[in-house]
Amino acid sequence: MRIATYNVEWFSNLFDEDGTPLADDAWSGRHDVKRHEQLTALAIVFTALDADAVMIIEAPDSHRRRDGVAALEAFAAEFGLRTRTALMGFVNDTQQEIALLYDPDVLTAEHDPKGDITGKRGSGDAPRFDGVFEIDLDIDTQLDRVRWSKPPLELALETATGTRFRMIGVHAKSKAPHGARGKAAIMRAAIANRRKQLAQCIWLRQRIDHHLAEGDPLIVLGDFNDGPGLDEYEKLFGRSGVEIVAGLNGEIPMYDPHAAAATSRHIGALNATARFWMADEERWMQVLLDYIMVSPDLREKGPRWRIWHPFDDPGCYRVPELREALLTASDHFPVTLDIAL
Image 1 (cartoon, rainbow, N blue to C red):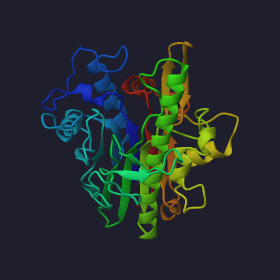
Image 2: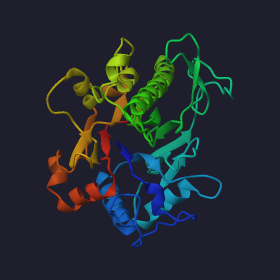
Image 3: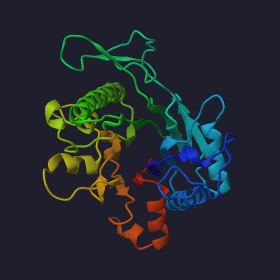
């Protein structure tokens, strides 16, 4: 079985209010890319992935007037994808949903959130992901209340052969100081965002611990907007959010080989799952943001990971159509996990 995570930049812009794909000459949300170009590129990438399930980060918007599930299923139908059934959990107001697009002949899936429903009062013990988490973020003995702007998608899945497992799709808070002006304001925003990102990862790790205690086979995947050594503020907090989720402080580990490599290196080449243009420096910056972490029982099955990077992966580079599609479709590249389930 192949499971993928893929952050699709401004996927929502490619559909009308009824969820119909807009394969026209209007601009997409991506720089210098038309909507029909991004749709075609995405179709090429999804077809090449040939995954049984894809956790889509920044999936089409879903609210009272728009149906992100209908949009994804229309996209799958338009391009003949076997991952033709979509599922969302708690929707948000950021135009960037988390959704699973999967092959119903291979898997069944349901949104199955765990944890207490907190309302506004909050809880310090793994509340439901649409609730409020209480934690002392700035060590002032006062509890801060943290919410997910994009609540993780928590799923119960079963294969056609009867194997049951859990999956959590994640889009953690960005640490970028968006909107801040001036060095002092940028620093304050960056530190505040990192605190919130770390709090989300602590919350997520609590949920992971609950699942592992129950013996649930578990896959946690998505865009963590973080990784070891990504910014200078990490030293203030001791470790990255990815290290917290992976359980590198003595907890039962969740394993991803790219995360493991990043935490063990202080210099040298690292894997990358995203590529951003740095206009002020006129160069590309490559970063590792996307992960697929597995519980120990699943790691024992000998899974294989792959980052579909158009330049770093020989299989992607050798196929010009796929290489160009990966560059056109999004600023992130898919990550896949091949595992016997």
